[in-house]
Image 1 (cartoon, rainbow, N blue to C red):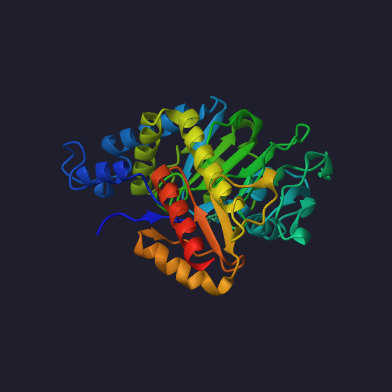
Image 2 (cartoon, helix red, strand yellow):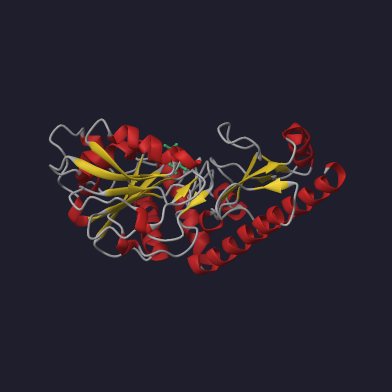
Length: 360
Ligand SMILES: *Cc1c(COP(=O)(O)O)cnc(C)c1O
């Protein structure tokens, strides 16, 4: 028994060092006489944990001072509603780039609140590429532009930042946040469910530019209003205390790895070698246009789908688990977030090559 290389799209692997640290601190955190799970979120011990996590995230992502960081519940899926409720500010329409299953969900939720202009829609081509900047049909009167930088299911990732001409850009960054350095100042709102690249499920991080807070529609539930959470430092009600603490440990771990520059370099290498293994074989294939390939979620199919079961079985026997593709795509999907060690990717590649030799 040992820890597998877990290629799950989410909840995903956490760094072993982080889990070991949590294990050490499990029964009693720092002479507090209790575990983090048992602390009042208003006590000074927990407040110090929360504040450290926030300041470490601000440092790691170089988040400018005019952005608030919220630690919420409800998942990225709640943001599909919170974004229009807070950002429409009297306007009637918003632009959405429809590039995959998650964009599609964001669109259908937004339609409850406003008219949605699909400024791009790659559904016809099976969500296998990113739309070019030139092809975007943006409306300069839109309240905001929403996009999904990385589509977790299709494995499609933007290789550029859409230029919106001053309209606030909103990004569902659930599966690519913290994967490399990025310029937060280009965004109005960034949100992400934690369970991919941040920490355990139950926590959702929202990074919102100050001037976009405070204009929520009158009938917005207090819990869905960014201003509520900004005003209460994310402690309006009980936050997901343990997940917040765990996320804090992950941010410290990122700093120990050398920050997002170093992490990004490793991620680029991991993705490049896995795509090379797929492209250099006639047995494996990835359907995504080369410039739109995700660093984090890499779907691939076998030449003969009848062999999928045998592939998965052999992989599991080597400790390579959760490789089955999303039901809508089929085949395999390797999610290789920050916590997936490079050795895990190497091990997958050698298994793929052996399997091809035996079965191909
Ligand atoms: C996983 C995921 C979601 C859904 O997140 P929840 O936290 O489960 O609501 C939304 N968008 C993207 C891009 C995702 O990867």
